[in-house]
Image (cartoon, rainbow, N blue to C red):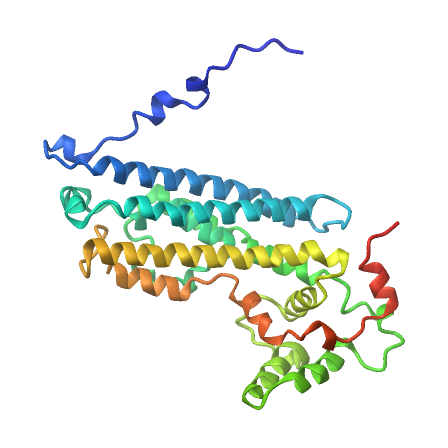
Length: 341
């Protein structure tokens, strides 16, 4: 084994750089603003967590860039594990707002004007996270100043992230490849195809007030020529996503279900982070504009309402049936969805 130099804790973590990276603007101006150090450290911590999220997303996207992901490889488990880690990081990010909320509005005003035009809106890592997950430019709230206040280098980084295949696109391709619905050998002995039978069972489950759901169901699962072109998931991916949710108890579908469910958790945690941010801004600056020129809480509220990335997965729950009403699957398919000897 190669002899290595001993590793020292402070050197390994580059503490000489990390702990000297806080330079309050108030100190430069000779103004006393005791809470600016907290403000800097909180935001630096956010950026470190964002870096870790990007790291995890890069690994997961590399998995799904493969043309095929074999059932017996650890790839899906590894992906679910890393996506759950992202959820845990986002949970910490939400809780971290509580520390920032110990800074009162007057404490913030001591140094707020010295920050202009710097703003959290200039966090390119957060924009890269959103783009890597699948938020498209045309879905963004406040497009006019989305990259307006970035320098050329950071603007190029964001545009590069938007040009790459997002996790949403890769998940769509992965779902499209699932053979369970379209493989005719499973349904050769069946009088009807799966979706015709499922439609009948779903129709019986609807209350009078839910009758409109059947028309939506037909558009998304029956009449393929009417499938909306503006949806992120294709017709095949949409069908396979619902199939996974319906029959998640079968061993081979348990991890795929965990994957889809974790994507919904990421959306939920991002929403919680945005809404916690809204309350923080309202509490701290009221209706004043942000330091970067945005409309402050109003902008954040618009983003929170529109930046749901995996909303089409969430919508699939409208078409679920209780287990006892689910159509019985062909025996061969049941065997193929089970653990193999």
